[in-house]
Length: 297
Length: 300
View 1: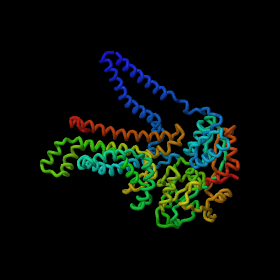
View 2: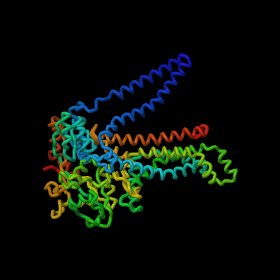
View 3: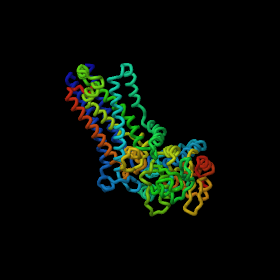
View 4: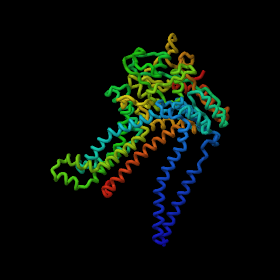
């Protein structure tokens, strides 16, 4: 075999592997559609997007589930964004080298804790504290879920934001300091705005992780399928889409209406996560072009 | 020359691996929907109610000492899962904490399965609150109003000024369905009252216990065998004028405790062979002694 043919073969294999990833994602989506799409013809929209989820009695309102997932995710983003960003800035800009060597692996360890363990911790330790100190009827709330999810999204946000901050050229910082800025002014007004693409990507990836989280939210949010309508809805129980599928899929008869509705909830989840990740990728490509390919270090 | 052959071999192996992967992924349809994959004659697949799973495990372990040649595999998943598995042939023995529904019987017959019911134990559903709750007894109408969300504060039933937090099992649980029919709907068949949408649906009994034992606002329910000593059990009466009764083995047996039910095992047709011997043993004195040990009510 001549060198160029060998080259072509290897290229073809690599291309096939890359395409197979797209192929499998498309296959998963096709399967979800096949099992869940009939629902849109069988269940009237008023029921499917109604506000009562009680599938064993024929109420298939997915609105409480959708809003529950959104509420918990937004709460998690609100907690994790400032915390993650501050940590990333600290690690990259302010920490001495020895501290950085310790912190970076520790954050990876954070990412490795199983979500069931966090859920159990939340249920037995955090929920009673939330009930006592925030004066709510029960500690199993969207807020408790948000805290657990923020904890889980933090390592992703920190790593990606840290890479983005690291990619800001040294000349920017030097220029700012040369013009008389303090260290904080240099960070806040020069480095962070320069890395904003990476930070946005970090948040989106963190949110994508949070939306799909199942076990932890199933144990700490109370799983009450109610539409959050008060101003302090964050401190009331909610039911997420992921917990619903996990809790109910085990008992449904295959092919039954309940089974298909659960798959349609899965479709919804898939589409939401896909959109978030696609937006993050679009940002990444755009930022990459503007920066001449140096966004992600 | 040698390097080209290595490349070719790697490519060939990769190709074969891909083909094998496709075949295994596309070809494994043997377990979908058929009525029964043949199993060894002395192995029993026992699936179903989470309420009964500890009991079923205890029975299986004790029976292994009586008949070591019989292998029994016990799994939970809920009454609905167990019955569904019996219908599609992946279980020999279904545990259920509720009776089989009409729709399930129809589906079973369509699959060529005729479910046979065996009553194996009795169970009391205890209504539990936090130990510091001054309320010690409630009627079924009051419980119905509480769990459907009509009564929202403990001071409406003689307690402190606290909001009521409802704790329940998931809607696929036989315990949940039984409580819905017997307490929330007060046993009336045309009633369509539901649990309040604010009810916390906990994925397990431990979830219920965890909330009730530390939240003074909480009220929940679960099988008597799952109630831990750090929860307070309420006495329940059928209605105003009826006596308040605490759940115990004797009050369940003599029918005075109103929130009690039978626990069932279903087989596909009349049981034969190892399955028949197992069921006979369960209904014997030895099997029923284990029922009592675990906090359920033995059959007379």
